[in-house]
Length: 304
Ligand code: ADP
Image 1 (cartoon, rainbow, N blue to C red):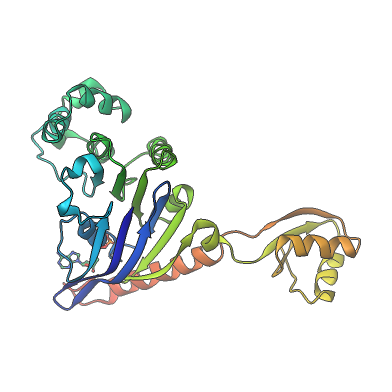
Image 2 (cartoon, rainbow, N blue to C red):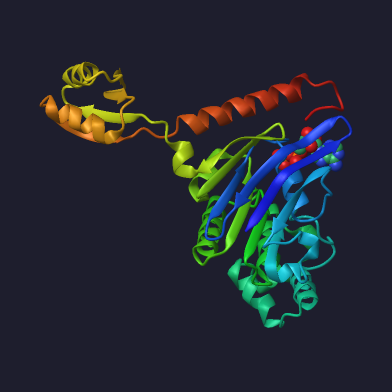
């Protein structure tokens, strides 16, 4: 598993990461969500031993990343898909990775196959790769050592919808086999569809964390009936909130209570479900708005 403990990083007057603590557990996909400039990359770079923290500690599989004997065999990292020699071909990059980790060359072809890079594409130089191809190659590099842990910074960037779907299935499969996945994104939807656990960061600080279900639940229930007025009255009589909107009633009761209340009043319910979105989406929109405002208002050279 991955542990971040009171992790802080300052660059001069800028606190990029401010007392960040969370855990990414095995068998789960942990989504690290935050607007641009929130501190995601800096946090992940600290976990991967690329940026020294100002204070705090990180552990991967019980050790500091730099103390892992053969890091590529234990932890697959994709932080910047373009951070490779632009003159090398994709195949060369994977061969070097395989040789460094003491893996057979057959692993290279297996990985190219896994990420759907054709032999012709594999022999092109990285400078001629699209961003999506670089991401696929980066994922191949991360997976080549058959690690237990994956750390990916914005892996969906540059992928087309089919590529995003492919990656989501790949990460899901990795976690289902007991692996630990920590991935970042600035897009709520991307995190929502793949993550089991979500950690939200804004301005360097953790603003929310929990399971996806916890964060998405807003404690409200969406009820439809052919007789909305009777439904609303029944709920209100039971001391519950009932707001009629868009051909349905939204109430502050949980689904079971709302259903029983309608039944007791003899009102037939035609649809009953937990109202989704709400909490997390609103919070994230606010964070994004604040960070964009900061960027627009900040004097030149200090933009977040
Ligand atoms: P994210 O990955 O969420 O977009 P980053 O971790 O890249 O955010 O950046 C967080 C903050 O730290 C930003 O304000 C960014 O400008 C600042 N920052 C990141 N790296 C450096 C650096 N090397 N020097 C100075 N400031 C930095």
